[in-house]
Image (cartoon, rainbow, N blue to C red):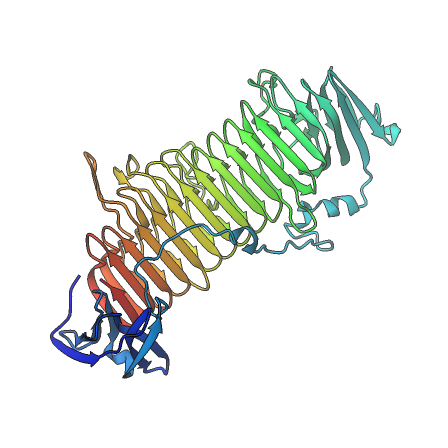
Length: 590
């Protein structure tokens, strides 16, 4: 940090003590654009009757600095100030107004439980060309194609299949077979399936050539040697079964459990999860679904998964020895309550994106919490049309990970938060709350991250990978009314680590990094509050950074053209930069 005191003004004031309080000198600063700021530039507690204020100009006369008696420097660009007036006033207790605080901290708020908002899900009932039209069970029910209902009721080691109308039975439209409680159905028309009853060794394998509706009406199914519900693809003659939309409607409480092996899987057919479909899975209704996986994923689709909002409020609880939710194209969530506990990834989208617009999502995972994982094909080619990004526009998203490099939210491209509330806790070595190979943008909502992991060697980067609140290999931008609060406590861990330009145009950002430097054979990791490799621009946000190591570090340019910057370091530099450009706004640092 460079200090700029070529000319110093020493001002003395006679101060009068007041009971349980003190006396302060207030600077009333009027900017050239007409804004007024009040700054406590001097404070004396009881017992002191006089004191002094140090003020001065930088060596290039571009800034005026106030050095407070507690060692904090407040800086303003000269061109920003139209006038300065001083006023003495008294305060009671410790309630004096100051524009900065040196003891700010980060914690989760109980208000998050109710403060989040959701994006409204609109049902398009007339325009069949929209992508959403086919996702709504309301439109499936309202179309004019003739449908029937197949009700399957399990009872111990048997299952009863009933048809409505009864004329469906024995027709080519639907064929039911299987042994004991393992039901196999081929359907060549749109049908409603209703699943009821209970079996400790039962399953449903559904081959459907059309969209279907499947109501889980308080059904309990455990399959000892495969998936509880499996909807694979299969071609019989000229008819292609599978790969179609299934509307899963929850009514009452249903429980699905897979086997400890998948020995019942048919050769050449997929079986990937307790509940698996090669087509789209659309969850709706107001019931509860409990899913346990002992061998595969919890819920999986080779297409996409959508969780409905609005009048629907499905509750889905998943406990999985692999991924909790695994899908190929994308995951779209508008509502409901989803809780995932997974030994691998909580949610993994293999060739697409994650979009969370509402509802409550809670993930507890060993590896990645929520991940868009596409990096390329097996032959090394990359499909540029695939967008492995994560967007959060609403809802309450709570993620906890425990494994090394187990990031809470991980995108192989971009992460965007425009609304909702994100709460992330990561404890493994090298783990990040938000980690993007591309850019990170936070323009609304609230992001809180708690980080407590040591650095770990990363073979992708051939270097130590530090734990961090936000890691962006591209640019990082925070604006609008966004709130970002990050706390890193372990040695070598960082609040923010960005390879690209950091742009802070709005919002409220608090970063606390309490760790010390970490040294190992692979190198040294600095426990900085913010590392901005390509520079940092503050133009309108309120930024508070507190660190044991450097509070804010950039080997490039630090630009302050608005907003407020508070940077404090106990063992190193509050501001470490190659160049400082300060044209508006104020800075406070020690």
